[in-house]
Image (cartoon, rainbow, N blue to C red):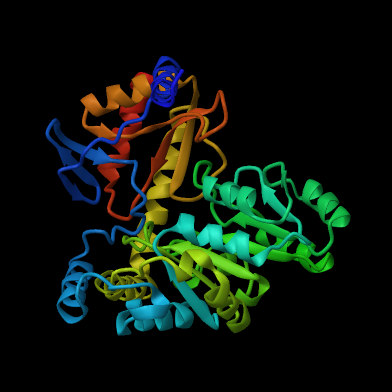
Length: 383
């Protein structure tokens, strides 16, 4: 079998297993509403938690940034790619999160690669929560450091590993992207300190949503920024843009600036986008009503879901997974919802473990009460 035949066979196998993936084109995005050639839909699958993606102030800032600084950065950050807009965004993040410095990246995937590959070497040990994002798993695989995964949120298992591997680097997420739950970061941090280990935190789904002014899960749980060796978060979720950053002490960030190949050899983010993200940070900090409305919507959904007899995973965040189990059944329910004007994607293996296909319901500050009542009503008819 030649290479193309092998590729074709693997695609055919995926189709036969009901796991074939496609990307549907969206013609119009208006926060709680999507539209394509087939019609308009209530959107319960996005990560625009604060409803900023179509915020007029943010759109205006993007246009202003393009007019002032141009669209492209023209080079890597250490050559000609670091502009005034990048500095302004970096300063805004430092002020918001209380960190010494940040580095900006084109994606959260790239930032996580840097965090694990360059902050751990062959003398270290990485310890990852078993449900860490694929970007963290790939980063661990590509790191010089050996790694082990501990059962999801199992503090006793983590404690045993830390006793075996003191001075390890513990890797976890502030909000897990497929389950929507948060670890006990205070307890994780305490275990790290007891064992002289360091904490690396992916806070992609908590930035803007949790904590004072939306600083993140660590702030919501009483940690200081200095309790983490490095923090990763991105602009593609609550901040409604694209790209990511690593935050930490001056020493950690300068070390990465000198040695992180993803940073040194990649074209820098668009300065226009950075200018918009500075505005997004300002809006996230100042507009508490967005978090209040999001939390109201989360509680409404959980109350209605409990009344309907649904068994949800234990999440208090905007990510509310409804486990279906069978992938084909999850896809059928998703398709049926779409016929009734609801866009709710089914999440299947290998993104989630076998037998745990689900509807990953995500809520936004833009959702209205009637939207949530309608969703639960339609789910009751199908499950």
